[in-house]
Length: 248
Length: 291
Ligand SMILES: Nc1ncnc2c1ncn2[C@@H]1O[C@H](COP(=O)(O)OP(=O)(O)OP(=O)(O)O)[C@@H](O)[C@H]1O
Image (tube, rainbow over all chains, first blue to last red; front, side, top):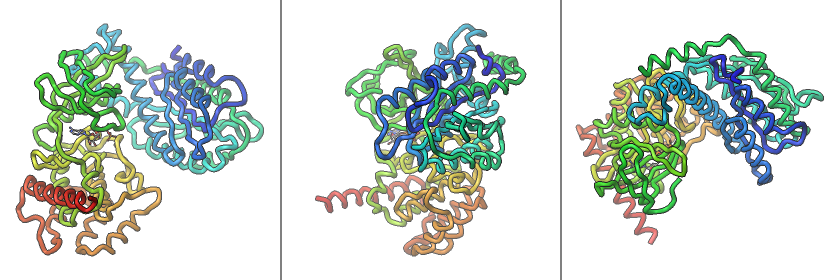
């Protein structure tokens, strides 16, 4: 447990898709595995303008987010950039809220929710400030199946925009991109390893092309492996200290 | 979250009961209802599952309550419903309409538009002086308070300390979306939102950073029959060369439109009263026309 979360960074996986997986294992089970290891998995479903897509698509994207303890949002391709920005921000805040809440419980023995509303100000301030200054690692798994053909250019631009907007945060933010299906014959591939440089990101994601099926499950498993490679030294201790100093 | 009229919202901590009368609006973080409080008075109540946002907004409304630029705020409380915890606060119910409604048929006179911008600039200047920026300036968040003859800002959720990252914004007013700077809260960010709102009001339509360019907007402005001085101020604000709302205010308020100097020592309240009168007359006018 908490192998991924324990490094004092926020690690999230965002799965972007416009359809249902049809290659490899169940993405919902993959998301559950990822969450067991401490990663939050969220989904963004792109709504098709031609109205295609059905109940089972919705069940799958919501199922992934539920199993990954993340969020699920629907958006038209034009608003993908905005949705991604909101989601990274919200997920980071939610994760910190959970950590703070847990720590608080172990320090003073109460849930944050059990505190009288007017005594929550300091904690809320803390969550906000910490949300800005904590390091963020985000893996975007992007559906590049055939149906994404007309949307891929917008998706690439949105990825670049996301990196651009994250660079104003006080904490470090890096993004990695996995495309599924991958380059060549691979089910999925890391087209861009963790980077903080938007120019580098833009260059690397250029090679993505749309075509083929939708191996969502394998893409999530690959994201988890990429996260595990990255686990650094723990500084959870610092976090506890800061919470204590803000509460008492 | 609520749909039935006369549903009761009971505060978990204060035990105060609020009767739901109607939904006033919904936004990014929650929903706003018109309710009747235990004292039989009307309140606006903001309800959400997001504790951080509700607590933060309450804090800012309290902090800036004295300025009258925001609704006065009262209780902060929780609501337990079907095993789920919600958070809410109650605030002054503002009787009136949003600037969005006032702009609907694009019937506001140029003079009224100038006055609205002048008043808003003054209001935002106060906030900037405290060290904060109101990042999500937009039509829906500006209300014309009919009872008190005032312009009011609703939704304090976007108030951001100067120097921090901007989280709540609408692309149309956001300089980063137009490729004109960072998404860091500072006074020039504020002036950009004001300038964009002003342009949109003058053009009488929404502007789209994905389809248009700032340079085009400036060209469009030049084509309008307005004093040239205006172009300069707007251009400076869009370029980030203006860093203080009071300079913007001085420039805009000293421009003569239709031969009348706007400044004229009018108080903000009087100014708002004139706008209200104009708006009311126009609204009346449209009713007659459409009948
Ligand atoms: N105090 C109030 N009195 C009367 N009407 C109000 C009040 N506060 C809000 N409203 C109405 O509710 C609408 C939505 O409010 P508000 O912007 O605060 O919601 P929100 O959830 O924060 O939305 P967003 O963050 O997306 O702007 C407003 O446009 C306004 O019409």
